[in-house]
Length: 392
Image 1 (cartoon, helix red, strand yellow):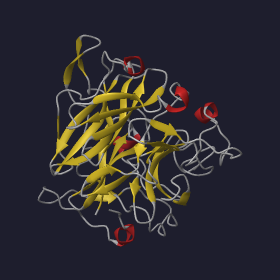
Image 2 (tube, rainbow, N blue to C red):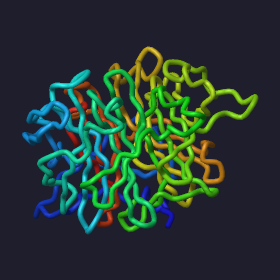
Image 3 (cartoon, rainbow, N blue to C red):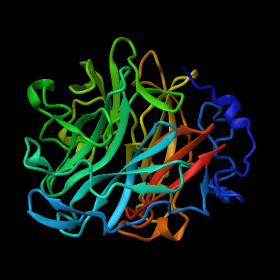
């Protein structure tokens, strides 16, 4: 199934009716410049923040026995943010990142699970479902934790999670699988078998697996015989796989040059093919990072991405460090080729819970679902809470 967004973008913004008799109030997700992207017929727009319900998830008092510390910890008391979303049995399942106040650098992260019948009001599981343990991944997950999940399923209904293992010093992109969203089997580093493991000790995170969004499900789908994933948080790179577990980063061909000068983390991985670069004088000047699972549409591959701004090199109208989100369309024949890219963000922090928190000025989109004939976009706010925006 492919999605035609031409009709979606022409639809008027309307109040969205949920279980509440009055329905939540919605406001435009941001106020970009007037010339922003009205011609982006290929994009999934517009989104409106559900102000009457946001933030939909806040820190809680969940407790569990930490298997490494051998003590009870309040695993989600400090912050909750950056969720993955799965629609299953006509309910929305949220796998979210939660932090305590003990680990490095600002608390150990674990992945929790919450369930909703309306996409707005969630009931949490008391204990996390993925966390550092005495296992083969402990050296990479202790004591920063397990961060920022994204979840897809295969054609047989097995779920695959990409998540970040953080050891207090370096981020590493990991894979886990589950049949029920409660019990997860860690599969290890996504790049462990690629190029004799040369990328295992390099910074990697934010794996967005190319999928078709079909009747609420997000199903990983091959193109040209391979699964594809967009990843990274300096630039956005790509990787391919035969089995959704073992991934090979896409490197440049001999003689090929990156589209922009390499800097930061990218300087340590100079052979990687940069798919989505940063842009000077724009909101995505400092870094770009994958959002929800990339989507196959009738126009191409739609990737919603996050970005960080530095006014000195980017958009001088945005505060320092602003995380805002935008969209890009890539070629289905060549998933590393950009066809169109929005010139502006479509969502940025402008609410108190988005502008102030563990990290100020952050809207970080990570979960997307088609639920009850609407698009629900879930995002972390100021690395502290979780909010939602809808497309009618």
